[in-house]
Image (cartoon, rainbow, N blue to C red; front, top):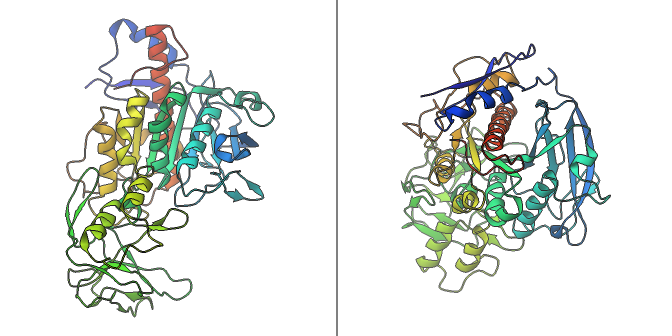
Length: 485
């Protein structure tokens, strides 16, 4: 396997080189010209410092108003020719944040924003909150277009007009945190032709890329009726799990039960068959737990609750759970008026599951690259096989796109030279031999922000390699048309 090293002289960084492998695509006749260009990489300052700009961006998603953005400008650019740009999409079911996404990052222009209908710190985005639906997707598209110089703010200024450093408008990336990792795939899938000259890469951090992961159909169970300030969970997975699937997990729904009067979970797996969601008091936490024998795990003779998202007015279960409920005959009296039926749930998840949009995203933007981040203990999921990470990796990999699980260790050391211990160094487009092994994940001793920043550095550097490669091969410095293997 061929390796290529870009050497720099960065006294404030322990990273001596940035490694890209494999590089079988390098054409021999271009090698030295490209190496000469890449050795121009500059060294960012040792401590990140920022100038923030409050931007109001006109957008069709904002109902005739504007989207609230905050742009964080570095004091110097990562490269001599300018600074790459990253747009962050927050996780959860919130409308986002305007805080600095990666406060320790150097040389990168970062953009934080609020989705339509959201507000924070006295600022707000116009439009109506749609629980990360079509308007939210449109908003992400327009923020990317602003990052790429296609749109102007309400003063008629582009991003380049606003900044002192030069933003590299053809080297924009996205980082989706947790549930934000769905928006960053659905957006290029649906709006690729608007942003194909702009968007180069996507990072997803511990993202629930399928509906089952989003609502935690196969994860730790949050305990009920906890004392104020107490949060507790039990078990790791649903014991009714049967088999992995790239779009959906196979689950046994034979003991599904519906109890409209239950104060906590009206739909659940009824392990003991009594028709109610059965719990006992947990003496350790003071909560109510379905772990009736208090052994820390959930067995088939114990209940497992099924949770929902919301479409803004109605509740919605995951695709498989909605299908199982539809087929079960449990609702012979009629479908509940506050619950999305099968058709509505299918339409809802069609805009919110990355697993069904990887192929569309990479088809719309040939050469789009991805990185999937995961630590030893996921911030939500409990499945030892990390099915959501596998689904994300395979979503990229099965399209033929370049994808890697976690950044190269040299980039982690660039962010924080004090990091110690064995760090995962996963080859691109190579699945772990064992998805339950911790060896491909980052230890919990390394903060999420360090890993996220390292990922952004690596993906930005890869995009720059691609730009240089295409520049030399086609003479077109404004377009990036092929993936870096």
